[in-house]
Length: 103
Image 1: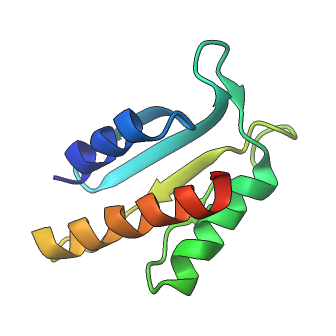
Image 2: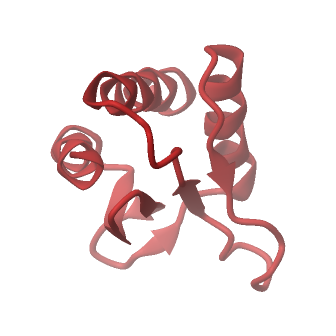
């Protein structure tokens, strides 16, 4: 369900360049351009995670493990007991955050 919802958001938001994962451990890569895969600005990636937190959903943002400019992936790892409703809340909150941060 999580991967399906995230793929649905990819169709809606051009800022999402890739969705990947297995089970409930997923990543959403944010890009400025899907063709070139130019990463979205790290500050905006972190702003999306912060916006989700302000709306009661905790997600991660890739830390400084890669060189500057390449830390552009949002991270999802909900509890194994998450319900379909919980997953929908996470992705609906992400949808709103992407709209607010990237317009």
